[in-house]
Length: 296
Image (cartoon, rainbow, N blue to C red):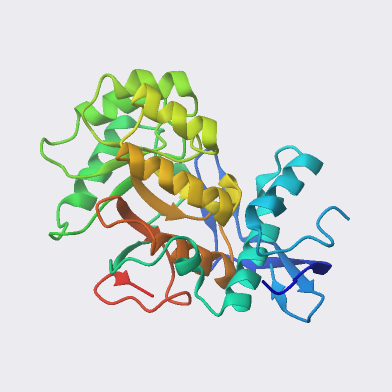
């Protein structure tokens, strides 16, 4: 194998404006733009990619690069993600293969795409009034077409009491998944034991240990795998394998990001077997959807 070493790392900060104007979350949180970090890694033979301990390492040995990052700095998955994705991109350029092939091989699955349908204002976010929440969910699902998958995302903003009150006021037979209902592990487990509504976890699924704990406690039916929270493609590949082995469903997502982040989502999503892939969070700028799905 031809020698390839990291020779230079450049870091750039970019403010990415939210395409909808204002992005609102529970608790009055509002965002008009997102702070993105873009990394360019250059090798000694000139291969460069956008994305003092990594200098001299072979970027194709992605696990060894990650070992070096973890040895130098505990945590900080968001920062490591940029470097990890850049190494994978160099790996693809060096081999002439798409990243999805290097991650284990693409499937023939056309990936369902999901996008957000937010409420109109900060006073109307999920979790403040269980009766209003139930009415809003029922109205949103009233005209749901066959094959459409709906996630009700509380962003960890509900208590056990408010979640149970909301769920008990819903008409029977509504088909949806409740994502990240509560902020803590204890609340989530308590709610899980009192409802038959499928639950996805997002904010609580942020590493090897938490995903293994989800499986051990039967805490959820699937996870929202956000690459930057979980550490990039190297860690995402491992979390994919853990979830597939346990029969969990996966929605590949990102907190925010440019086409670089969205491309990473698509490549990882394309490697997940159809029975385990729920959705990817994508935009038309990343891939052109057909009937709500896309593929590489």
